[in-house]
Amino acid sequence: MSFRSVAAKNPGLRMAGVMIVVALVFVSLTNESFIRAQSPSTAAKTPAAPPNWRVPDESAGIDGIARTLISVFDQADIVALGETHVWRLDTDLRIAVVRHPDFAKKVRSIVVEFGSTTEQSTLDRYIRGENVSRAQLEKVWKTTTQAANGVWDSPVYAEFFAAVRDVNSKLPADARVRVFGGDPGPGDNRSRETAAVSVLKEQVFQKHGKALVIYGAAHFYRTMPEGYLSSVGQDIGIVRMLEIDYPGRTFVVIPIGRLDIPPGATLPVNPDYQKFDRALKTQVRPVLVPLQRLPFRDYTAEEFLGNGVFSCRGPGGCVSMFKGSTLTLGQMADACVYVGGDAEVDTRAKPGR
Image (tube, rainbow, N blue to C red; front, top):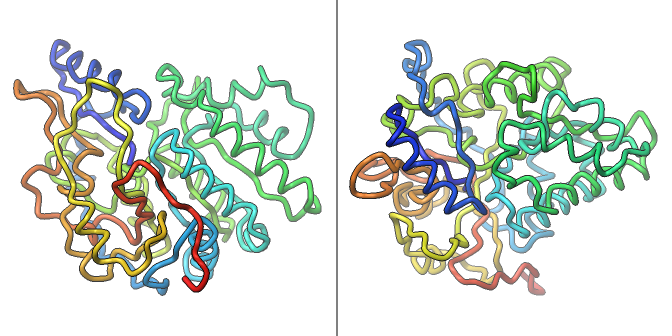
C-alpha cells in the first residue's frame, strides 16, 4: 500500500493535501497526475474479471511466499508485487524471490518504480557487475519524478539492486536478469504509469518474456472508485492499462496489514485485523493469501485498503477514496501478502506449516 493523496486544482487546497503527504513521507508518494482530468477514452474502460489463478490457500513465511510467486510465473507473464514504501519486510521478500534458484530460469526482467528511464545505461552497468560509483548509482533513483520525497534514499532500494547484481555475478552473461527503471526521468515527458507500461510492452510482452514488477501497491489495483478515476488522468493504474492489450497475463499481489504512521498523523480507517487473522489457519506472518478465496474475497476494500488512497481536499480532513465504496478485496487484486496488525512480524515458517 503506497499512500496517495488526491490533490485539488485549487492551489490552496492542493497545498493542504501536500502537507498531509509530507507528514506521511515515510510511507507515501504524491502523484502529480492526480490534478488532471480523466480522458473519455479511459473513463469508458472497465476491467475484466480477475483470472482464476492456481495458488495455495496459504503460503507462510518469506520463503514460502517466494516459492509460490516463482511458481506463478508458470501461469502469468507478469507478477506485479506491490510494496509499502521503505518496508523492510517487502525488501526481504523481493530479495528472496530474485535469489530463488528458479527465478532467473523463468524471469529475465524486473521493472521498478525506484529507477528512472533516463539512467537505464547506468543501471544496466551496475546490474551487470561493472564498476559504478555510489554517486553514479544514486542518479538512478535521484532522477525519478519522486526524488524530492527522499523515499528512494532508504537503503532498502539500493540493497535490492545489490542483490540482483550479486545473483547475476553467478550466472553466465546470456542468463542474467535485467532491471529496468520505470519512472520517467529528465527529458522523458511520459506520465509515470504510461512510462512503466511502455517499458513492459517493449521489453517484456513484445519479446515474449516474463517480468517481476515492483511499485507501490496502489499502482496495481485492478479497479478503483469512480471518484478516484476521475482525478488521475491517463494514469488509471499500471495493471488496468496492461489489461487493455494483454488481458489475463498479470498476477497482482498487494500488501495488507498494519502501517507505521509518523507521530501526529491520523488515518481515516481502522481495519479489523482480528477478523482477517481468525480466517487464517497459519499463525505465521507474513502469509500469501489468494483473494478469490472466501471470506477474504468479500472483505471490503474500504476497510483494508482505505488508508492507501485518500483525499485531503475537504474541510473534514483526509477521507478515504474508498469511503462508501462497495468494492471488495477480490476485485482489487489476485492475492495479498498479509502481515497482520501487530508491530512484530514473524517471518519464519514453522515446521509442518
